[in-house]
Length: 74
Image (cartoon, rainbow, N blue to C red; front, side, top):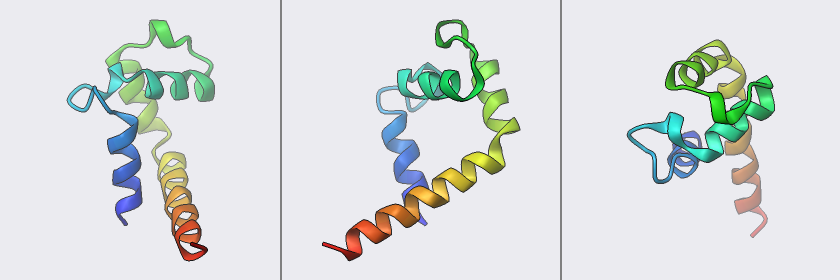
């Protein structure tokens, strides 16, 4: 349950109050959507997150499962 929050916390390091400024998130949006990262605005990033919310939630759930499996093996 905390894995998605931990991922978002780490992904927005340095830009937690303005996550659309995070280089990592801008790069991920560019990779996924094809929009150039240097031209992305807050509206673009937040719009992308809203439009892709189910895929993003699925990704965050997957990272949680992956982390859980990794901890079981240690």
